[in-house]
Each structure stands twice: as structure tokens, then as C-alpha cells.
Amino acid sequence: MSNTSAPAPQGRTGVLDLIERLGNKLPEPALIFVILAAVVIAVAAIGDWAGWKVQPVTPKPVLVEKMDAAGTPVLSAEGKPVMVPKLTASGKPEIVLEKSGAPIEPRSLLTRDGVYWALSSMLRNFTGLPALGLIFVAMLGIGLAEKFGFFSALMRALAFITPKKLLTPVIVLIGANASVASDAGYIILPPLAAALYFAVGRHPVAGLAAAFAGVAGGFGAGFFPTGGDGALTGFAQDAARIIDPLYGVNILHNAYFKAGSAIVVMLAGWLVTDLIVEPRLVKRAKVPAPDIGGDPNQAALTATLTDMALTGREKRALTLALLAKVAVLGVFAGLIFVPGAPLHGYGQPTLQNGRVIVHHAVVIEKKVAEPGKTEPLPEIAAKLPRQDVLAREPLVVSEAQTPRSATMPEGPGDRWSHVIVPIIFFAFLIPGMVYGWSTGTMRSQKDFIEGIYHGIKSIVPVLAIAFFMGQFVAYFSYTGLDRMLAYAGGSLLVSADLPVPVLLVLFILVVVFGDFALSGMLSKFGVMAPIFIPMFMMVGMSPELTTAAYRIGDSVVNIITPLNSYLLIILVVLQKYQKNAGLGSLIALMLPYSVIFFIAWTGFLLLWYSTGQPIGPDSPLFFTPPQ
Image 1 (cartoon, helix red, strand yellow):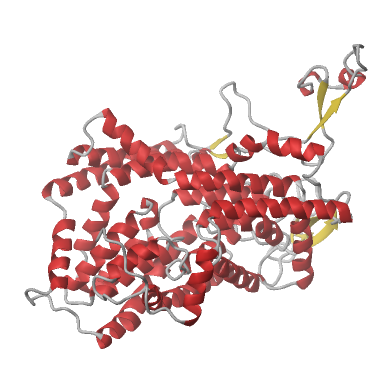
Image 2: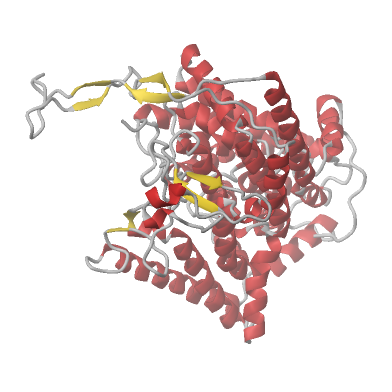
């Protein structure tokens, strides 16, 4: 691609022009979270002064007797009827809300204790973000594979061996899976697709559009887990525990739905490219014929094809890397499926001393002595079990009498589910190393470390945003506004009794419009997850289902929102073939993809919902409150 700066965008009119101007005036994502944190502080202070109160409620399933095929009640071993959740006509558990505990009041941060807490917890608010570890470790392996060219070679190889008739679906499908390679998909695939289309006598801009639609519009789809999945997992789990402190979400919670979505995106992209976009392009302008000598477009595209073709050494390296990947996955498959192997069966993660981490509500009591006098340990200490005394005078920490207050951040479950991130790490690290060694790009330990650093460098902006996001999320929780909003909004949804399909469509639209105000999957989800996930859980929607809907809304607008920083990179490529093209021209080119993706992908989610099938391993569609 050209290194020269792009000409000033032209051709923008009406709504698109307005959207771009307003989007450019918004603060950077990190500053948006600073503003949101300030809003939380102000609202909590006002609510505390005004005496706001919200009655917490607990969603409970309506239980009925389980019947056998003959209509006779099924009895337990004790001879009592077995009770199961009553299902509605749509197949979801019927839920009622019961009052639970005293009303919640907002807690102001503009107090002596509030300011002390905000300052003393600043570091913990950042390091405690559940997404940090998942993203960091996954990107160590993914970043190295990207650094040494493994993803680039794989995308180029697949594109070059594709038959002409299948060029569009394969390009879109590769793009839909390119999110695993960070920004490599944006940089490599669109210019390569344009060159390939030109080589087979098709309009190069159609190839560019198909590739960009797959990479950006299909961002939330794909066959492989990514660092972004880890981010969604952490925030979804934290939000879910507002309603159910024991709820767990795994990194593969949308795996089945993501794989199916990749096929939907491929088919929709194929339809739009071949039946809408390319015919329009051909009608408006001639396609440069491959055999016309001296055409500057032909020379540029021919050079692109030459530069991106795999050399003999790269082909051998790619073959070895793919074999290494198969070997790594084979080893882990053996560890998982062979009886008695380390990852087979049920397990519980522990610390190095064999203990497990447990979060439990506590009461901290302090007895202050008068100046000049000493005071013995408070009498309460004598009444506490020895393990509950965590500090000596002047603090005594005792267990709070809060129902279901104890939670394990890493609960028991299938052993393989606890090692998904290490599997991702090795499944990309080792093939990336093999490719780098085979091509000569990794010859020393210094090269290896630089490859490791590459993935971390790519998420530095995310870490900066995460610091401020962590403060906002923690303030939201400390003030109690998260629970107040969840209970109030959830109660309204229950009373409104809207069908879940309607809620899904409305939520996707909210995310779509939010994409014009706040860019970045992680940024938007950090705002929306603690609000919408608890509310939807109260009407029986699982956090995993809400996350699946979020993927759709976050993806389909990526190809037209001016806040997508990659839009300008694609514009530079577009201007090679349409010199007067501006941002409005690019958005108009991609708009059909956005509309069709929204319709097809949302319809796919609604169809999946109607089947009642899980959307990932241990990831149901419905949330059934604990009995």
C-alpha cells in the first residue's frame, strides 16, 4: 500500500457526512471512561442526597412436577415428586421475582470513606479486570505467529489456491476468521483480494469490498477463539454475578454460534458481492482488462500479486507450521480424551499450596483505644473460628452472614475448560515459531523475544483504555448503581413481558447505534455488559446469549462507521482504482453489506434461539435461577 497520506475525503453528503463530523468530535475511548466515571460519581452523590432506593428481587423459576411419558408424576428415591422448572410456550423457564433483602441505596464516593476507597483501590481496579490475563496470555502466542508471518502466509495460500467461481465466498470466509490475527486481516487481505479479482478479469474494487466485509463486518464470527473472546468472557462473567454470584462463563461460550455465523457471513457476503456490488461497479466503470499493457492499475495489481505470492521456502514453512499445529492440537486432544490423562474428567484449579481462591463478604470491625491507653483484642475475636481471624488488633475480619456470598472465581468443572487459554497460547506459539524458523525470520533468542513482544505491543492501547475502564466499572459497583439499574430495569422488562426475540433485536440495534458513538468491541462491552446482562438474566436470557447478540451489533457496522480507524486504510487502497473516491464513496460501497449482514445474522440468531440449542460448550440460551 502507498505510504502517502490520503487525499481529503470527498463525496460525503447528508447523513453520512453528519455522522463523520459528530464521530470525530467524540473524545478518545479512554477519556470517555473518565467521563463515565465522573457521571457515576455525580449520580451516586445525587441519589444518596435524594434518598433513592431500589428493592432487590431474586428471579425464581416456577416449579412443576416432572411427568413421565404416561403423564404420571416422577418420584425421587424418597418418594417425593421431582420438581422441574415450568417452561413457557417458547421453551424458556418461567420466572417470577421475589423480594430479597433490604432496599439498595446509592453509596456516594464524595465522602471520606468513598475518596479513601477510590484512591486505595485504583491499582486493584485495573489489575482485577477479568479480561486482562486472558487477553495478555492469548496475545503472546497469537502475536508471535503474526510477527513471523504465519497468518499472512496462510491467508495468501488459501486465496491463491481458490477456484475462480469460489473466490468471493473464500475471501469473505478468510476475512471472517482474520480477527484471530489482530490487524493483519485489514492490511493483507483487501489489497490481495483486489489483485486476485483483477487477475481473473473481475472488478478489483469488488474484491476489496468482499475482503473488507469479511474482516470488519464478520469480526464477531469465526472458527477460532481470539483474544477478544477472552475480553467478552471476563466482562460477561462479572456482569452475570450481579444477579448470580456463582455464575461462570467460559472463553468458548459462543464457539458454536461463532462457527455458524462465519458461514452466514460468508453466504451473505457472497450474495452482496456478486449480485449487488460488482454489477453496480461494472455498470459504472470499465474493468481494467488483465491483458491491456501499460495500464497503471494493471502494473500495480500485477506487482501486488507478485509480492504476495508464496515463495518455495514460504510454502515449505507453511506446511511444517500447519503440521506443527496439528501435532499441538493432537497432543491436547490426547490429554483431554484419554482416560487418566491430565486434562480428562472433572477438576478444580488450586493455588500452589493446594487451596482455592474464595471471595466472601466480610465484616471488618475496628476498636479504637483512647490516646495513651491500650486495649485488648475485642471480645468478638474469642467467638470467631480461628480461620476467620485475618488480622490482629486493631482489625478483626469476620464472615458476614450473607446468603450465597461465597464465590470461587475459578470453580470446579471439566479440566479442559480451565486450560482453554493455554491451549490457544501453544496452538499459535509453536506453529508461529516453526514458520519463523523455517523462513529464517527467527534465528535467535532475540528474534523469539521480539516476536513475543509484538503481541503485547498490539494491545498497549487496550491496556491504557482498560485502566480507565477498570475505574469506571469499580465505581459503578461500589456505588451500587449497577445493582440498582439491573433490578429496576430487569423488573420493568419482566412486567413488560416482551418476547425474547424482540429484546434481542432491540439490543442489537442499541449496539449498532452505540457503534457510532464509541468504537472498539471492548470499550462498548465494558459499558453495556453490567447494564444489559443482569437485566436480561432477570427475564431468562443467559449472559452467553446476550454476548452473542452483542457480537452481531458490534460487527455489522464496523464496515461503515467513521470511527473505525481501519476505514482510512481501506480508503487508501480504494483510491488506487477510484482516484476521486472519498469516505462517503467507501461507506456507500459497503452499506449493502452492513444491511444484509444485519438482517441475515440477526435472523440466524433468532433461528438458533428457536431451537433451544446451546451456543457454546456449557453455554445455554436460557438463564435458570438457582433454586
